[in-house]
Image 1 (cartoon, helix red, strand yellow):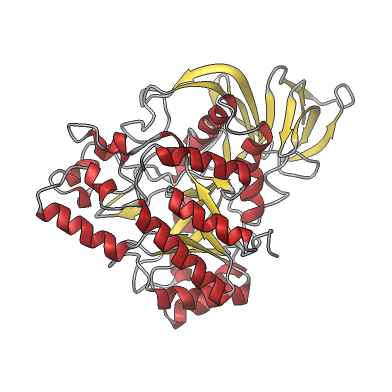
Image 2 (tube, rainbow, N blue to C red):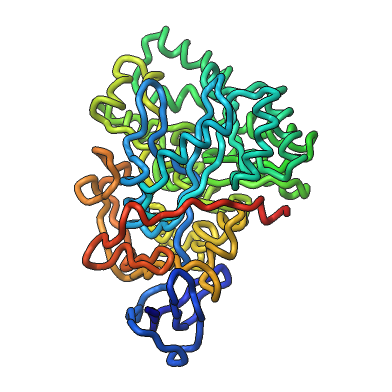
Length: 460
């Protein structure tokens, strides 16, 4: 069976144009002028956008953290992603101290295999740098995982020293892989947090106050210098602060292979949310923390100038009840993470509505660039003949109000409760199969396939 999507505006990074899209099986067969193609079935996209499916390159399904785990399974999380127009996620396989990278990868495959509504890939978190793990990085690349995340934060859990980071970067340079960095000065932050608790300051807002933007900027600068010394490409994850953005922009202006992503929470939420009374601020605890609103304009500008290349979610949901509440009396025990995989495309479209981004830049940051950055282009990230038929039909005129009562993520609150947005997903195809329609979710949680990725296509 072939399906013709007709009458819509196809959106690419270069802009929008009216065209028909023919889907044959799991792939796009042709993109043609209106009226030049025919199919067995027709989907009317008149008045709507036809987008390449969103790619969320930073999610944490079933992630262990602080004695608990994020509440979205691969099944619930990928279903929620599909509802929001995301057709690919790249999740993080988390190496525990004393374990191997390859056994960790096997463990995450076992979690995801047969349990995903959309296609998925993996990054690897490297928390134990030693001769074995450095050697296994090459085997991970051969297994389709060419990106490795490290942490300058969370001493005693994920933290790596500068020397360990240097060794991993040297290996990444050798094998063509990309190092992803959580850039916050965790050693200094832990001291500030301990001082706050000792002084009796234990409310959730202290999470933000003890992780100041200067310590994100410092760590980002340090990571950039280590990457310069080693010749490794560097990708800064979930950048939140103007100071960190300035360091990235300077490195990029100097021609260094430094890239960065931000997340919707840093564009729309602020430390004022962390300061909400009655422990409500715990809902907004994530790292890096929400910043003063003054940082938001810089982040939007960074997206326009490509100093911020990608928008991901860092989706890592913990329920308010029983999970976030673990930190009552000590903000350090609040599980770090927020839900968002369902709302990324809509929130960034709101940026288009507000004049912060063009249509093309919306698609570029949410789909095309992550596809190239993480070795999936042109299979993903573009509406073109031969590409996977991951297609979102998006109604720019529809309105919606975000709420925990209507979202599909497996979490008991919404970080965007009451947000009124213009635009919403109408229909979603994953590899040619309609998984979301106006009638609801029509997919299957066994539909998604593992994506063996090539290396960063901006470099290789």
